[in-house]
Length: 367
Image 1: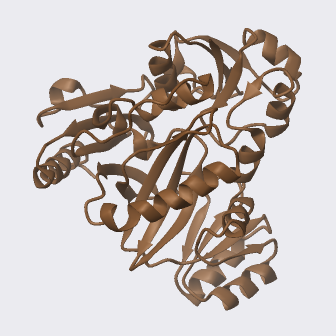
Image 2: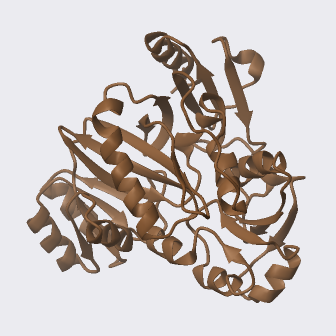
């Protein structure tokens, strides 16, 4: 089967690598200024600048049987037009929801899934009213184009609010009640064309400056308490949206509450551990799902951790902990840029945590 992937980053790279094992071939939709180094040699790259027709893109891609995505920031009208020529999975309706924070929150609340309180703001007075209603502190986020902590502000005091409003240009925002969470966890699942769902283990995630730095599975203190509830939430999301592919759900844990923070309609950084911790990684299952074939085994085979490499060049020979697998993306190293990750396992969870702490200290010793 020939598959088109919208995007040219490391997620597209890892999907293509795993998909080739299933006999699939690939081509990629690139946009101006996209870095294509991660997918070099994996398939044809087709440039979409905004003016090309869906028919022209479809033909240049090699007339794929299905098109999928590696990112939220896609041209939904293009995908709707491509949908007339081949299957697009996940469907553009879902992508339109998840690339827009307000639509996403409205969708979640409509189907009964809890989130932090929120309000829309399009003016300084909207911001003021929202903060009066929600209370300080708040998280202020752009409605679109926000990931890895970008276009987000944490306003803790009245002075923070005043300073923010001094430079605010009335761009669309979502104001969210600040959640004093004790942990950030995520759950990833694949849903097949036939509607079958396979869940991965819940991951406990640590962030640095809004960017994921590490994941560890199982989420030791939260797996037993919250997995069933998280699976119910995610199953509902997948079913209600008739989703096909892999979807990630990031959550806050606050006491007995599990609040959904964000959805990602694609393979996700917090699931990279699945390359070592399961028989079938999230990347392979993403391809299996869109190909319409049976999903692979997602059962956790042992405690597993992942460390992100953010602007850090590391060689396999530099890694001193046992059973470590380096995944390098062949991207130019820049500060805070995701250039690779390291997966590793240990049968003893406490030792795994020690190894993760030691590796993080080794890699980020100058930070």
